[in-house]
Image (cartoon, rainbow, N blue to C red; front, side):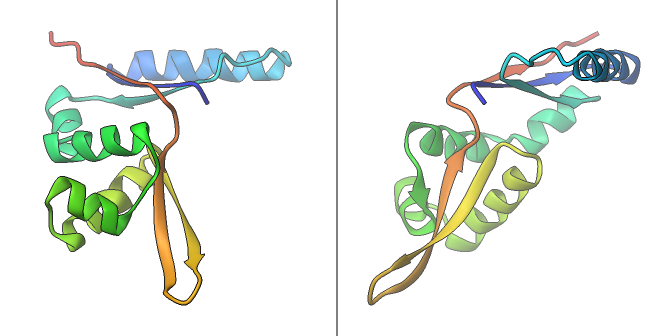
Length: 124
């Protein structure tokens, strides 16, 4: 995936976009490598994508990092980082994987799903 768009929109527009995507898929047309995540309310979008979570996403967009590296880099509590990683992974903005560190156990690596994420909020 090359790009993620996070936007606000009304339900009718969301379903219009979904129908268009389904129609393209039915016709065997290719997709342009982007994913759109839609919020109905701009306030909800900015609550979910708080400043702390946007900073976390920016870090892993630059390079994949472990939970420990994020904790250190962002100077935040490990449990808060884990909570934010879980939420961002659930909505599809980041992915995590576990890798072993020989002689030291397992670490969780976090990376962004795309090198570019656009946030668009429309008021009114």
